[in-house]
Image (cartoon, rainbow, N blue to C red):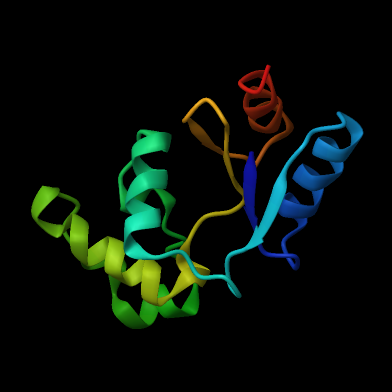
Length: 121
């Protein structure tokens, strides 16, 4: 499994602590340094079963500058959102765990991290 993190994020650190406590085998991706491509974001969205606006941090300064709260949330606007996430990775909700079974979770709670762990067995 892979976990997308921002080391400055307390929820990311909590998720890593839980993964370590459970002895999980995982790879860390510091997505602000190793920025996901638009294709990788599309793949993660498919795995999450979510749309790009569902994983956008709308309170970030970049989101406010772009005016994302005013953007349409429909199929025709999907690529605009994905491009924004690829160009401004700080907008991506974190942490995201991609499981080996092809699914993914936004792991902001202990329950979500445990859900990802349960998909690894």
